[in-house]
Structure formats: structure tokens, C-alpha cells
Length: 153
Image (cartoon, rainbow, N blue to C red):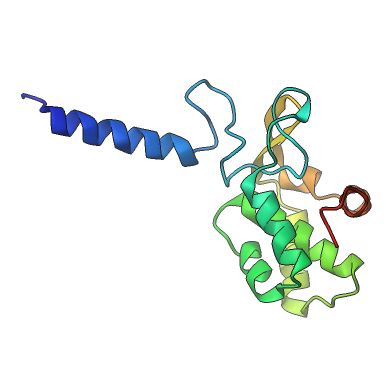
């Protein structure tokens, strides 16, 4: 079968688009620009890479008090987005914004989940169980840290 230049270019473009959104880069490291990476800190060597876009989006939803949109994150098929949804809902609680009963049940189910979540902290990339990432004490500390650093208004 003869592969044309056009087909080669189409395959190359497809692969580039696939890698742009995939949590693992072509170099075998997690891609900090991927929406499927959980971290509210920097990624990469000593945390100097940019914060994952999903974290930035979550902070925007929390700062704009957009409960309806953040609620959708709890029901995402991606555990990284679910984790950000839980974190954002925790921030709402810290801000005195009430959480609906059905969402509290979903949050508790997610906080007990063993589902692996792609994550980064500094230069360490890994996959950790959601229940280890979403501990109440860690989320409370994260709220005050993010508030102090100006991510939350």
C-alpha cells in the first residue's frame, strides 16, 4: 500500500493533536498542559512549569461563584476533573456557599474512591488514589494557601 504525502501529514496532525491533550507527553512525562492532570501547584522541575489549565479553570469558577458549572465537574468521566470539582466545592464550603445534598453525597463517594488520578507536585509525576488526594485536612490547608497566594478572592 502506497502512503501518500497527504496521508502522512494527516497522521502527523492527528498524532500531534492526540499528544497535546494526552496526560503523558511524547517524552514519557506527564504533560502539565493536559486538562487531565490534577495539581493546584506547579508541575515540572521544582514546580516551575505552569499550573494545569484545569486548575486555572477551577479557580475561575470558584472566584465567579459558578456553582452550576463546577457541579458538572463532579460528574465528569475524568477523575482529574472530578478531583478539581471536589476541591472547588470544598472551597465553596470554606467561603460559606452551601452545597446541595445530592452533591455532598457525590463528593463523599469521590473522597472515598480508589480511582487513580494523574497528578504532579514539583518534579514528581504519578498516579495516586483519589482518596489520598482529597483528604479534608489537605483541602483546608490548600484553601488557605490558595487564598494567601491570590488564587482565590
